[in-house]
Amino acid sequence: MQEQNRMRFEDPPEKTKALEVAANLENRHLDINRSPILINSILAKHELLSEVRAFFKSKGVIEHSVAHIVAKTGACESHDRVFSFDYYGKEAYLVQSCQLHQECFLPYFGEVYSINGSFRKEHYFDTNNHLSESTLIESLCRDVNLERELVFIEEILKTVSQKILDRGSPSFEYFGFSNLEALTRPFERITYQEATRLCGKEHGADFSPEDEKKLASEVGKAVYVTSYPEQIKFFSTKRKGALAISVDLYLDGCGEVAGITETESDPAILVEQFMRSPLANSKEQYEW
Image (tube, rainbow, N blue to C red; front, side):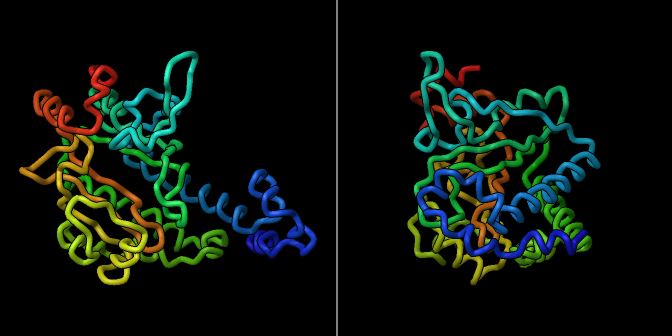
């Protein structure tokens, strides 16, 4: 079976490369007939998501479906990177995150996850690390602190990666196993303040693709960046003084692959943090 797959992944015949680039970009679905990259991407994603679902099932965590057409409550941090369109006379948006909607399920289920599309107006157009559309795995658990969440994230990534490595996978082998191998080793940690100094960034700035490469080369292949300033994180993230109780995981060659936060549960604090956030001018959509 593996040998048959390898044969399918050979470079396409020369005549199939004669299609014009413009036509190819407009009809990417046709690449399935001639692109080993696309074929292996589909197979690798299938393997990965199958292992993710098996892991959550082993923990008794419920998967739920997600709406893709949402109000502004589907934004991750601000509204400047959401795709908007007219929806029967009202302004609607393509979802970035279902975090706020997931929280409504916690009183009954305790812990839930979803695998859904995420749509984002990215500012970077010269890198594969920042996509306008991607698959997002979101998990939420009631009454846990950040350290417990970090242990959980590390457990799922290590478990899934090790299972694929142990079994062997022609599709992952096509792209190389280096990232999977990096996820099986202990994750490095660096504070946001240390990372900005290393990358020569101003306080409060995001990391560029070049910064992400520097973190990988000088800190580690899989790095937790901790202790972010509270003003650059989502309003529902719990604060400790001027810092958000939040961590991002950066993986060499991929950029940010996970965001982990502890959620504020005090209604009064949530309202106060919301009114200081970039979302405050859309208060009516968040009142629920």
